[in-house]
Length: 531
Image (cartoon, rainbow, N blue to C red; front, side, top):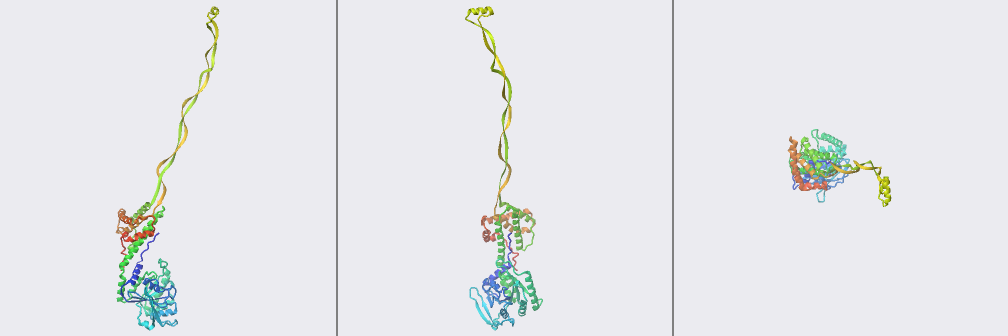
């Protein structure tokens, strides 16, 4: 999940203070800062940080890297003296002690002269050698002493002995805990809580033993690498200066208020821009996590804006309902589902009409078997005598002749088929598909939240910063205000780009950043109260 990083007001203040140290056109104060502490505590690193140049003064990163007094003179009137480290190299400790006017340790190599090397931007360094008496005459007495402490290295007995000697000579000390962190991402603090607590206890005890229980040590925590905390350190320093110098220096510190406020608001808005770009490049997956991720982003934005406005408020129910509705709307808008009609296979048996026949029996003449009778017929004859004879004998004239005569036919039985109605007989089966009136999902395309995701969070950011969230709004009223803002924001964002799917988070940041005050036309003034 994307994490919104709250702008560090301390880092912003320190940034502009460091810039102003190098760019101030005139001298406005006269302050000598002497920096002491154990070797490797970050004294040289702090000096380089104040100049804005990483390696203006040489620092090898190893023990005993400063074997002379490094000196930087800032245009504003601050003189920075970086002393050799203590509690490591015997000779260098006496070097440190002489520079601060302390008695040298008899058992350590004796120091008779001091070297001051001045470092100037874009110029060669300049060395000057002073005898101890000459050094005293130059009045290099500190207005403030910064005691650099690396709490991860513990505050040991030798440190306590040195601190006691120092407090007996100088009381205007600020104890600076150099919180060693990764310079790139400002993470991974090396010192533990126990380290820091132990060092504070020991410092407090020595401080009280020398200056009394009513004089409490002034402690600042900074990062000598990043400069964060430097502004607060300088504010603390004002409390230890003479009133005249303190007032001038304090006015100088306060001169950057407008820039600080603008930078704070810019960084706060740019974090929101990075969130917009992150969400714009995401796309739904069809899982429940889609809603959860967007809802977490809205929660993160709500808490972030609450912090920036110095507001402690739970999210109203109507606002929760609005966010829920708009998240689901966004997911649905970026999810394109493809459906097709649901069909059902149908079949039907086809029957045909087939005639039924039945057999009947019938008796008919058998013409092959005629019934023949024999009979006698009288016929004319040309034989008159025979004709007369038969006439007298049989009573017929002519002659008698036997003839055959068919008088009929025998009967025979035959069979035949006659139509006896119709019957249905299966012919074949017909198949077809028929729509059921329903639809089925056949595919889904997930598009990036893109323009719509940007507009959702931008609109919510404006709603979150408005007075509406503090009123007893009904959902319909809040919804009406949301859509009125969304319409304007959508039109504005559309003019910047079409925010296609091929854009990266960095591409989107590059589009939105130049228009940051247009798309986020509100400020975080309550938190930027610099008094």
